[in-house]
Image (cartoon, rainbow, N blue to C red; front, side, top):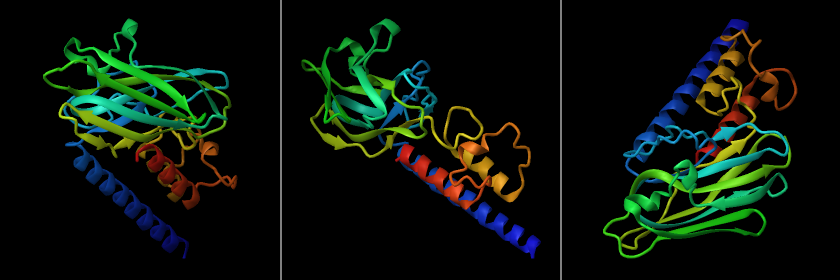
Length: 258
């Protein structure tokens, strides 16, 4: 009976992995011809893909302690003829304090994507309702074309108010306006999280690698857990890795990658 249950568990887990990989492969294939927006928690590495929608050099999670100041970069992914944009970012005002926002950092050679070909811009960032940041920017004059590729839209600085897990920053609404005044609401959004639950391998990211390790532990394939942080994902404190933790991981990643 025990062997039967173990084999059944392995079948269920293998099916779950295949379903997850298949669904994400379909999504990535579908997204490569579209624009997106993401929140990069490490803008120092910013060699983003310029001709397709991807998460190259975009880190959607990070770790921080109380009173740390963190900067998240709002990134345009794979845009075509971008002339202006309007973005709303939501955060938990009880857990993060918004310090300031800028549309670029010329000192670090992080120019706004709209400034391709030395085009001037008129942008501003405001805070609304305590938990929303509104970012608006537009080219000035009459340029021949808009911005293309991927790059910086804004840099937002926050102060961390607690060390509790799963502190999310969310792209609430993103609108891109092209050179012909076509307004598109962007749905390919990639959010970020501070101190995520489920970063089992402690690589600073919450992704499919953590789910695979959790599934391996659940069915007994991976028994060397001495270097893994199982307590960080044991949501019901039963000192086990089971389906409840797997579902929690799936849901957390879904919140990051809308």
